[in-house]
Image 1 (cartoon, helix red, strand yellow):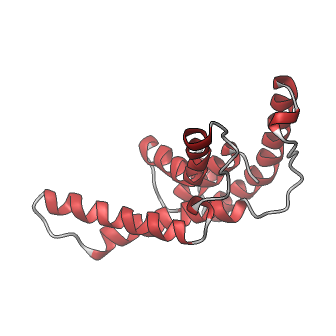
Image 2 (cartoon, rainbow, N blue to C red):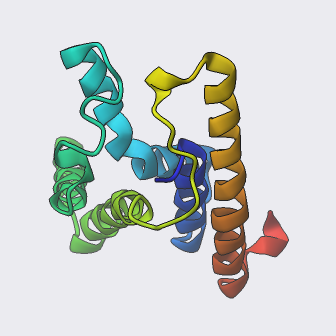
Length: 161
């Protein structure tokens, strides 16, 4: 299962490939790509253990990206209506589709069989936990960083970065 760094790398690459340009748009895309891990917070609130609900709730199910995409489209349409104009299909559909793809990237990445160190946090100390996360981040940068570069190269966008 990828780290937030890996999800953010892919979120950034997908946002660039979609033609987004602002820092705020990149931040939102990286947040959307990491959104399913909100289940860590749910586990902490419900059970006092961040890992208790991880990958066990709807945020990591295939339906969740569709829900987020639909909610994004509804929000964009709502803001347009609040401004007193009728939303166009493209201005609603593009952000909805991108939100769906960003969240779906997270669900798909967590299924990849990469060699992550998954020792239970309760059985190791803070130094070992930090080392484990550092190793997992190295795997993410190597795997997803290369993938992001390939996506950006294919779209002719790395020369701008």
